[in-house]
Image 1 (cartoon, one colour):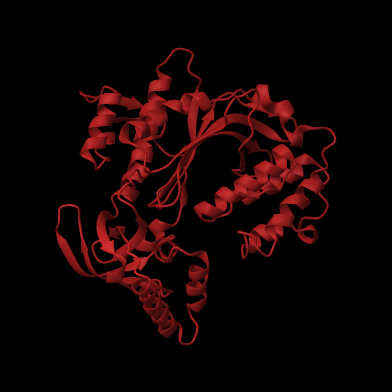
Image 2 (spheres, helix red, strand yellow; image 1 turned 180 degrees about the horizontal axis):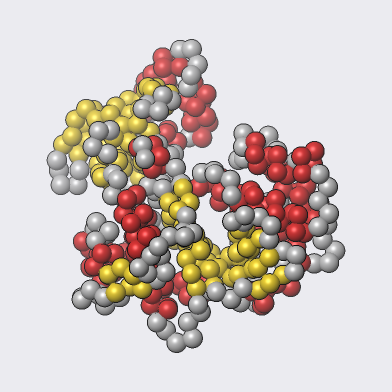
Length: 419
């Protein structure tokens, strides 16, 4: 896979994958680069001696996570903003993007680095300018005549403003990825931000699931799906207790475990519902309850600045997210007799085609829900099949999350609020 492919989330197919069904704990721990975190995990799960960790498909997942997590070397460098100059340049994919020329930086051991050039990825441009309107202006300048000159003028005026107002020039941690040939600016953070990435989430999730599987009265579960990029991981853990709903398919309780390590997002654990849809090849639809029922929480989120022990302990909550579908089904809007499936389609369409929609430009998604394409949706099965096809679209992590949230809100609560 070419370098930029690692920045895009991809669902790893587990269908027909041959698997030994185990890895050893020492192999899992080898994915953790931080010795302090590795030792803390070993102490938490009593891994002084290597043990066999048995989970279906775990060896195949291990190989995938290792491939993504070892593709780049991550550096954390202290950089003063007056040492950085942004410019437009063409990257290896032929796209015009912002590059940052860093005159001087130093690591936490005091070593000085000079004349670094890094391509911006994710939201690093927004983090640099720390102003939404300025970032929109920079994006507008891309590809315009004189765009490079105007970006240079913006940078000069920004620095002059700081000098004239006697404001202290900021110094922050620039997180750089190195693939051996190029540097990429992943994010800009404070020193409090910790490197809790996809490998750390994978290791802790596997260890906790194995622990749960060995406990009394453990639910039977499988890893239903996993999506990966260099900075994102999205697990779906499905309970092996399907409920058949005539005309719709099977529904399972499930858990979604997500980590988006892009500098301005969180790690989350969510109760979810997994529909295995009839008449849709490989069709699955994931719905995420977001309201408490009988005081039971459906989600837990933590940020990347928490202490190591708090980060590790958060994974102990996984078992509490295996919810009983029967306990909640009567609270869900789509199962109520008065529900009009076409009204629900229209609620989704309203947000999908909105001028300010995060789904703007995804024509395949628009076509699924527009009245003139979808026609009149007369039954719930047809609506769920459309939503299942939307789930299968190849879109990035942020858009997938927002799409799931929208569809979940409409189907479970009859609302079309977005995050």
